Amino acid sequence: MSSQSDMEPDDSEKRVRFGCGALLGVFVGIGLVLEYVVSSFGLKLGMVVAAMLVCGFLAMKYGDEFWYSLKDWLWREW
Image (tube, rainbow, N blue to C red; front, side, top):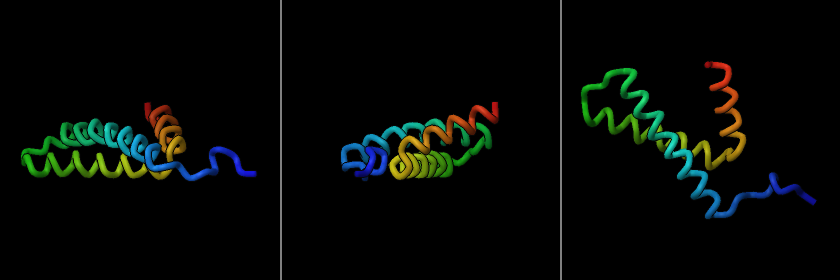
């Protein structure tokens, strides 16, 4: 018998995971834009969209492991 964490998430859980990760990606992308003082609107939009997609995909694929590793990384950095 497998545990609950070994089961593949259903489609609705994947959408929620991706949505939460994408929301984090918006903030990460905005932070990158502000840190590197990008002047081109297209580059700004590209950085935010890329961060959204990367964070959304990682959250969808790894679930809680992604969030725990992010928390651990932030704890070490600050």
